Image (cartoon, rainbow, N blue to C red):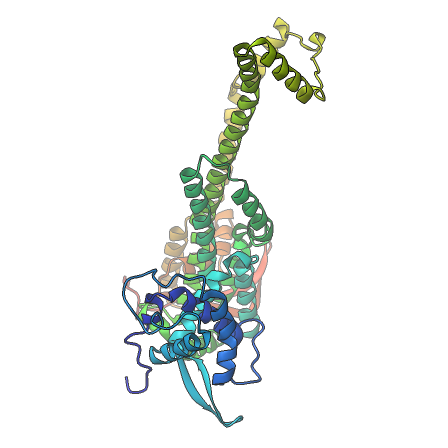
Amino acid sequence: MFFETERQNFFRPLNGKRRELVVACLRTLYESLHGPSADYSQSLTRDTLKDLLTPTVQGLINEIAADSMQGEDELSILDSADDQLVTNALIRALLKDGWLETFGDRAGLVTAYRFTRAGKLFAEALWSLDRLRSRSRQRNVRSCRNALEAARKNIDAYDLVDAYDYAEKIISDLSEGVDYFQELVRRLMSEASNTPWDEFVAFLDRFEKEFKKQLTADNVERHRQAIRDSLSRLRNLEGDKVNTFENQLQDIAAWTNQERVESTIFDWLLDRIEDRVEVACTAKHPELIKAMNIYMRRAASIVQQAMMLQGGQRRQAYSRAIATAASLEVDAQTRFLEKLGTAIAPSEIRLLDPAAFKLRSASQRRKALTVTALPKISRDARLQAAMQRTEAAAFTLSNQDVVDFIRGELRLQQRPIRLSSLPTQTATDVLQTMQMVEAVRASRDESLTAKKLPSQLHNAYYTGSDYQLELNHDSDSNPA
């Protein structure tokens, strides 16, 4: 605690009567120090700080009611007309409660001001909340894919950690969209009496800028297979490259030790990235589509109801005009009808041609019923479907059966086995050879290892990388 800023009353400035003014000043200060247009060439002295906060104080000091909360604080007791006193008191409060700190600027030989670490984090949150409406498209899916490719090509653990961060943000992006549509639905239900034109136009604008990209170019389903392929290539790296990754991750990702159990940091990160992407595809992305669909249906129904009510009011206007004319005396009725005639004189009346209405013949009605009838499945169609299922099942092998086969071969020969040395006399032999490396890695069995060899495998059926399969007797849980 000797080296940390005192934060016992950190949130006190946000709990007083002038809390809106404090938040506005914190946003202004963060925009100046760390925003897109921040000037890093000069330090923030006290005079510069006062000049920066004074316009914000002048703009809000008269708008915020001083009696908005009970109690007194050092900002509420000041004269609201003196903006300099309020600015100085605000700076003292932020320094005292741990939002700002001073440091010696050796270049300018002055005492400068800056955010504390905690102050910067919370000021960034307040600044980001004010900028939510100006957010643009989200590209975390493509960023995750590109970071995985960069990690594989450059053997750089920093790219792998970036890919993990992007994968985590994919879920938050989709969750933010779900929350946005759920909030729109709640507003529709609470304000159903008013037609939601403004919110619907705002939704269309945000859809064009953000959700359109998220559902097309940044669609998680579109990049799902590419991310899977990148993860598979990373898992198939040679042993020295994997060791390089692990050594780098031990230094830059030590925080994973609290969450992982037995696996290495490299394998744990790959598994977490794959899990986040799968959850986004199977759960969050459909949830976003469902929430958007619910909002569109509710908004469309309310708009239709509003249009029907508006049309009904127009039709009822004629009935009210007739009732009003009937209740008036002769002279008043004449004046009312003259005004009404003048008002509806520019109107045009168009009637539909009765010849355009034609009833369907009996044959047309029977044809419509025939088209909508359910088709009958013939015996040949059922036989063809059964043959297709049988053909698909004939070339499908269980990973567990393949692992049991290679385990039996390794115990029988008592030495490592190469894929190129396995027989390929039958279709089952060829399928087992093609599926063997995938089955060994999917089994998560530490007693079996598949090591990629520099040589190639060539046979009459396919060409690919050759692997050496070994049985580790030390970690084998079922020795022969």
